[in-house]
Image 1 (cartoon, rainbow, N blue to C red):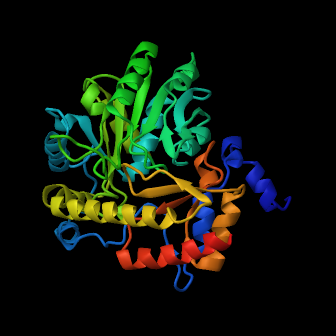
Image 2 (cartoon, one colour; image 1 turned 45 degrees about the vertical axis):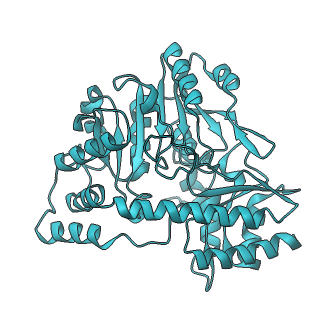
Length: 399
């Protein structure tokens, strides 16, 4: 028998898997993870452990024996709670039949792509963008079509004319993350209406990632404290799929519980995909998510206020530097800042880990338009953030 080398083994897997580049975020994490004294600002999570009342609800369910197979769509009581939650913040009414529980936001993305994308289909997506959207598209042999975001006068904006030009006969969907990861940019109501009208005219779907909707610092008028949404401008039964997660609002990143909101008519198809991928999300974890929805509003409000304060702290610090350019974000909890003359963001990220002991994410990993930038997650304990900024500003002054 011929001895199989590592190269031979890798060459025999699907070409789309071979071609997919490593994540720059993961490269940074792997380079610096576990270093003594390192302050990690590289991934999108805050400093808080999951609140005790959420853990207690999951623990009780676990010890009560809720360890068996459960509804593929999710526990009925959790889906009903999600409908009530949405009725508080978005124009409804919402039915529980629109909500489907997934194994984190990433499975929600995978389900949406499996619903929509065949080989060689195209999905239009503004860039820079979170790489966990275009990566799975390519691995499914669909093609992300990037619409370059405009960065002028330290402001990001969406080129709607360019987006319209990118829609063609192979387009299956328009994907929008708003508030944006990594930019912190937030689509206006006018932007959302324009995208809605493009999608309607072309007969394509909208994939709406509104994970950071509650982390919004703009003017809400007399309405609820959240970002503009496709739910404000779209009918419930048109071609829109919403992707969300419990990870950010309720400090549950490690739990891997998320949800999809979609027209109820898609229910059987979504149920089949969940069945064949994971056979559902553990019931005891869903009981924790239920406690989060029902009793977690004070915790969410506290996190949002901390994020707002930390955002202002980062803007004050970076604003001292002549070689750094950025927009003070209206949403999410990231600062995406450009360093003058930077052409290798991953190399700079690794150097900052080695020389300043601060973990950031390289802008180049976020796609076209991202090179030359670095991303910082600023939702951190204020004292830790102060120390990270002192180290980073010192490094940037000498860079």
